[in-house]
Length: 273
Image (tube, rainbow, N blue to C red; front, side, top):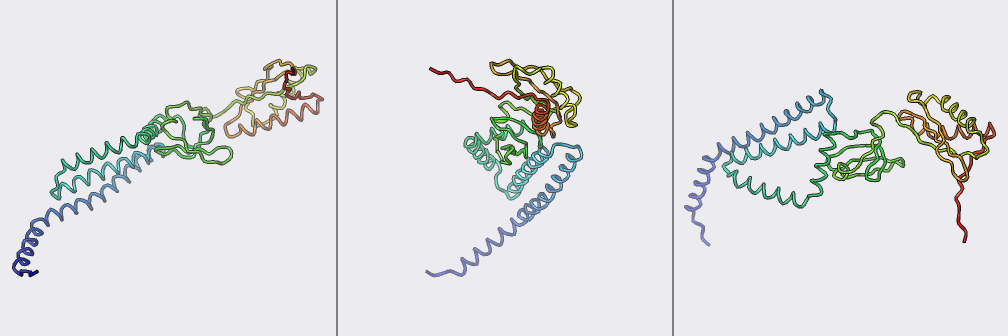
C-alpha cells in the first residue's frame, strides 16, 4: 500500500484548521467546567454553614447539601456539553429514558428514599432516641437516606428500611423525656395488702432516680387463683429507666424479706385427664 504524502498533508492541514476553529469552544467549555466545579464547591460549603447556623438536623443538612451538589453538577455538565456544540435535547431525552429505566428497576429503593425524606422532614424520632418499629427495639444510631440504623440491648446493629419504617407504627420511648415502668409483684392471700403497698412506696421514695412528679403508683392489678398481683408503676427519666426497673424489683424483694412477706411465685395450672 502506497501512502500519498499529499493526502497526509491535506489531512493534517484539515485537522489543524478544525482544531483552530474548534479550540475557542473547547477552551471555553473546559474553563466553564473548572470554574463551575470550584463555584459549586463554594456554594455547597456556604449552604452547609447556613443550615448548621440555623440548627437544622445534621441528617437533613447532609441530605439537602448532597442533593444540591448533584443538581448543580448535572446542570454544569449539561452546560459543558452544550458549549462543546453537542445537542443537549437528545442528551436530555436519553438521560430521561435512563432515569425511567433505573426508576422502574429500583422501586424498592425509591420507596426507601421517599421514606427517608419523610422521616427527615417530620422527625418522628432523632438520633439517640429509643424506638420500637417493625418488631425491632433499639436506640437510633444513624438516619440514612435508605435505611435507619438501630443498636439493640445486645449491641447488635439493625438496619431497618425507611420505606417500611415510615409506613408502619413507631413507638418513640424518648420523645417525652420520661417513662413509666409497669412492674408486677405477686403476694400471697395471707399478706396484708396495705403493708405490702406501704413497703413498696417506701422503696420508691428512697430511690433518688424515681421521679417525684408524676408520683409513683402502687395498686392491685389482679386477683388470680394463686396470688394477689400488685402493679408497681414508678416514673423515671429515659436514661434511668432500666436501672429504676431493676432496682425497684431488687429493693422490694429485700424489703419483703426483712418484713417477712413472701413473694408468691407464678403457678401454672396443668389440667389432668
